[in-house]
Image (cartoon, rainbow, N blue to C red):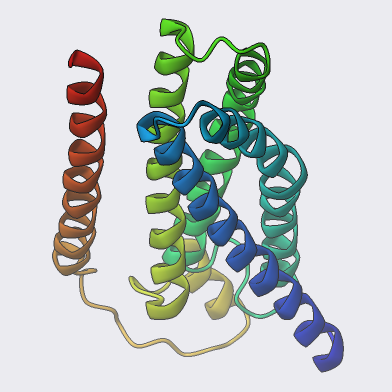
Length: 210
């Protein structure tokens, strides 16, 4: 792509990706509110807002982020399959989008239950708990994608090295990719999220036991 078009594509990708991350964070806040708030009107509003955010913000931004990311990769020397970090980003984005689409009916169901004043329904509480877990997991995945975009770890794939050699580019021999540091970083990050999630769910369950 020409420089101007490349910057436009990059701007669109960053905007949609950051917007997706922020929207999921807002959805998670609403899910926590819906499960822990004692005000019936607030709970009902939270579930209805979750459905609106998912349908009109999160889903469009997810597709925009995926599409602009592919355009950005294919239209620049980075490529789509030449670097490990881009390949992992693509797989994680596809996974997050697929899970989002699978959970969209559950979000709509919870909103319908809340609108019908079925706030004490066990099904609604189960749905709300599941949505909280999945939104927290989605937020973690999107944060990992953001980390990959910044640090760009792991170097070239075999396909990427082969393509560069075909173009006459001399490449130094790469040492074995050291992923232990990144596994450690992501492991600590995932553990922190799980601890927070356990605390939130533990408080929610204890509240309903009493």
